Image 1 (cartoon, one colour):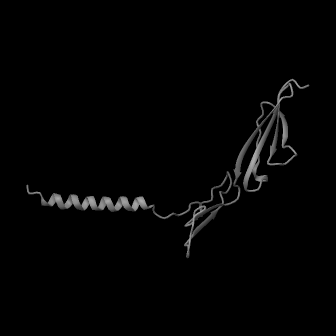
Image 2 (tube, rainbow, N blue to C red):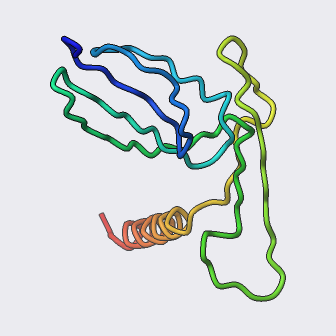
Length: 135
């Protein structure tokens, strides 16, 4: 019988553990070995009496280039011809920063256009009413 608690780490449904460690443990999970997409980290702990606890932690890996799409949203109903803007860019690594393509241009939100129109209308109203006042 063990005198301390141990934790065993699994990724997804893999029956082979990443490792078994005495608690508390610090562990570096190298996501570069995982495919992009949804994964689950399963932590199984056993105390010194043999009682077991399980915690599932879902996470998403995105080591590949980021993909941004303007003009089509998830589960959107569409028809006709869709103008799309697609940008894919890598993050580089922790030592270098990739400037080219690292920002995705976006169209101006509708509320900014409405705000500008309202401001211009208010300015015009203010100027016209100010000129009408006789001093």
